[in-house]
Length: 57
Image (tube, rainbow, N blue to C red):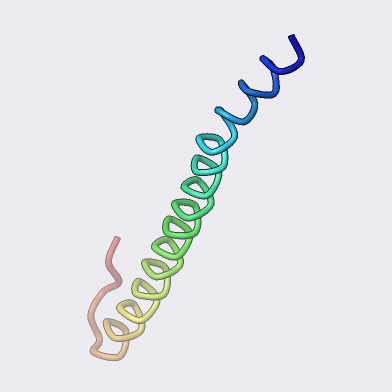
């Protein structure tokens, strides 16, 4: 019976590891996108203020 559980763990390990790697990569992508959008909004607001336009809502 011990060999059965070892086989099950070895069978599930690659799927779990790939899932964890996918989750970490997607989390990094979403975080980078959020940061990039925030930086872009800041630059756009500064440009609008410099040109005398009202800030976007």
